[in-house]
Image (cartoon, rainbow, N blue to C red; front, side, top):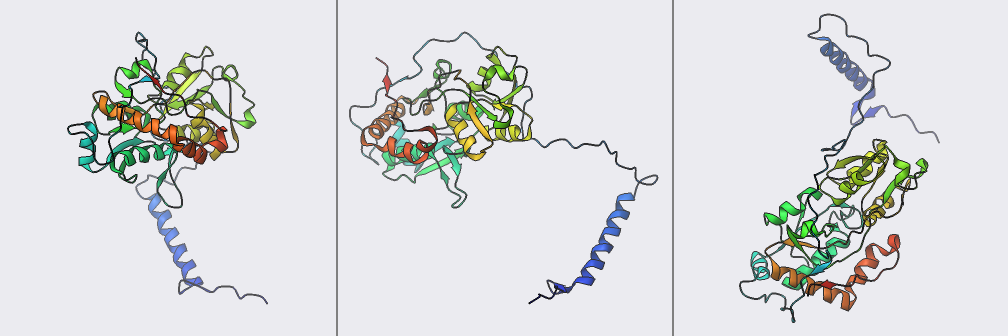
Amino acid sequence: MKTKPQSRIAGVPVAKRMKAAAALLTVAVAAAGCGTDGPPRPVSANATAAVPRPLNVQDPAEIPTAGPAPTCDPRASLRPPASMPKPGAMPAGSTMAGIVENGRLVVGIDQNAYLFGFRDPGSGELVGFEIDFAREIARALFGDPAKVQFRAITTAERIPMLQDKKVDLVIRTMSMTCERWQQVKFSTEYIPSRQRLLVRKADKIKDFPDLRGRKVCATRGSTSIVTIAAQPYGLIPVSTDSTLDCLVLLQQGQVDAVSTIDILLAGLAAQDPTTEVTGRAVSDEPAGIGIPQEHEDMTRFVNGVLERMRADGTWTDIYDKWLAERLGPADPPAPVYRK
């Protein structure tokens, strides 16, 4: 049976709507001509529009001048206390007691890092590997993993946020370096990583030498952008506020590769099957939880939480939930403590 064509839309006859649309178009055209000294100029057949970019792209990126590199073992953190306090019963006058009194743990995170920290499209809730770590620390403080206030921050904001004490912790794939240890404290390593490349499969790029003289993207304020500039192939570093913005630039053809730690690149590749992770590792990037420099007691407390997570299988459960499918099976990194 044939269906009769619709003659009304939203209760208004089609003919009337078409006449109204035509009238509006006439008015719009007339208005466009107002204020001109003659007929509108024709648009050139060669006219092009600029490709839209994410905000705050630096092309080429500004690379900070490197000072004398201090020496240390960047993985070595402070030993946890001999016994951990019970949730809700933190030592009087401690950093942890102040957090409990405030009623929530404030954590700086990335909300655009798929698998690590991102918004679930169904629930709208923040989820991911690093989000679960924050909830475990809240559980140890309050007995309630929900008592976390998440603050989405950029890569460049991580250290200033800790120094200004606008957050209690930063859990945002923050590489531990000797330079950064002079500015903030870190937990023990909670996941290892190395800097590699994300490229479009169709481009047949296999390693850094294939990118000679071409544009490579990483986030501003990261160790990755410095490492890109240090490669001996005349690479052009391009910086953005987030790694996801780098993926957008790669998809648009505005850069030829993204280069950051492999665990983040795996999340990007999972979102775009036309891309792949490739290239030799050009750095060793142990990730630690960032803590304000003055908060030695909190550093020891967080390390106590990580010790428990390694021992009781919580680390493995969280890893398997979020990362094992993409990165393969793994054991938690062994803690390193200072003498």
